[in-house]
Length: 304
Image (cartoon, rainbow, N blue to C red; front, side):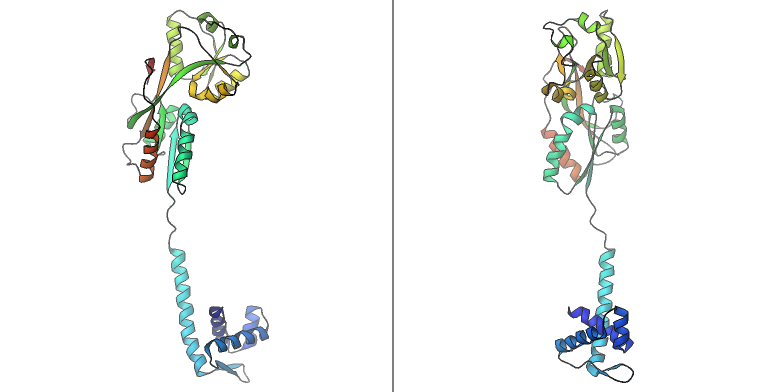
């Protein structure tokens, strides 16, 4: 490469000695000499001549030394300038969700979004309603779907979907094979539920007011823990249907229908902070979520 040979020539001119240049570059003196001859051929001019001390530049060599040194200096300045230019900021989107929409809707939404926005780095966070609400308020997430947010939650919010609370069991549970179920069946079997005062708590509260004595043996932090307990045949579980839909399709779990059981639906909402305007990327994701919204058709008891 011509530029490499010019750089070699400048080094030779600095040392005024082929041998010193060869030792500095860890090559043979004959290799240095050969490359300088190629450089002279490139320019069609004699650049140096040998003397007792080493070499001496010709007039053409002096001209090349001056011009070549300037080129190398400018090149080094250009390299530094390019290295100092910051890379384009990576666009990011942080999505949050409570458990039910995180199972049913958000994975599909994120997958569809990444097809149209492949350069956007998406972070997906899932937790309980209180945690996700805090993330939104602190702008830790750009946009989220929350099921049954608290009444005091102050944010930009629009309705997204509904989901039914469902009683379910292990496929080998005696009730899974019983054709007709009643409240006594529910009362006589241990229950595994989510902890807290959410939709399940309110359903069981209604049943208790009807005089039904229920046996709650386990209160779990997460829906996965409820499902795990039911798979181990510890009792009947109660969760929103979206959380167990795939398990039911695989016949790992079975939903149970109790005539007269209070029919409870949970409402999910698209939410984002009022204090932080949505970025263009977040707006694109919001538009995608809006296209996935389901209308409210179920007249059942509403828990918001």
